Image 1 (cartoon, one colour):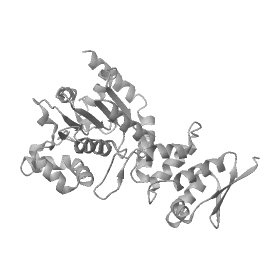
Image 2 (cartoon, rainbow, N blue to C red):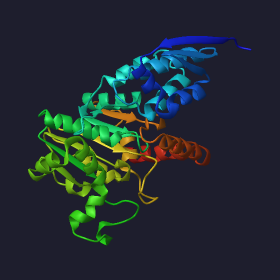
Image 3 (cartoon, rainbow, N blue to C red):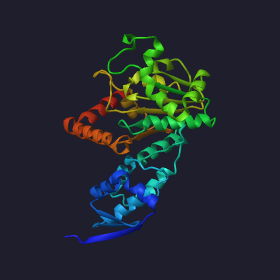
Image 4 (cartoon, one colour):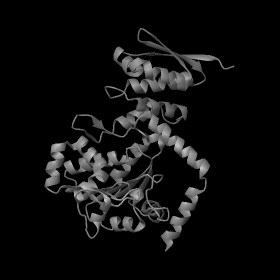
Length: 341
């Protein structure tokens, strides 16, 4: 039987409030997940447990207490617990959180800092800074589009690019725009709404509309990119898993001088017909060895939505691994064959 160990921490009243969370939600979760008992005695926390559990819990608590955010989100607690559970021997939770916290991309109109929230997101943001073309691939809720938008708006406001162009395939789940009611703008708006939402939150509705009227911000279906050359622009292609190989090639060959491109997609949520290959899958095979093109793989650990979303993503990943163990390999072989043609 392992001998019980004890660790003590002294925290301010404000730090205790932040670490404990509403209804002691956070501290109870730390106790449960890291298998420790935590008692508060007038600002001094006594952490007891076996093995390295008290040290890991103390490291996590100190990382939360030192957060630059006024209020800690549950996602941050969950991510810190996952770091400790995985046994990040080379880096403490404190150093990880400090690395993430220090990278503020911009602020929303409400003054909230926009920054990566996981090491995977931090690597994604760094790749966007360092490469001309970046593919951000991962499940829903990993911040692929939102962080790309934040980087684009920051570059635009700094004068690094002259305009922002946001695009995504306008046909999903087998539906064609011609069957939707209304004029062309009303037909495509529902498909582009997530991009509008991010622009409004970061840039502000008035500023967004002003720049859109001047043609400095363009939100359009992917089909509108054909025949154009896009210079001095920040270009984001969203939902890239729903492009065909021909559409992806068309898009990539639109890129001009002074432009930067971010392509985001979730390879597990394709809405293409079963016999149609995804342009995102084919691009991963064809372009993987080209310099200045980076592929960033985000995972369920990088999900920053409600904690339940992370569990849903993980459950689906586990299910697909059991049900379709060879699907990914066969998909890669198909893509590789296409790339050699």
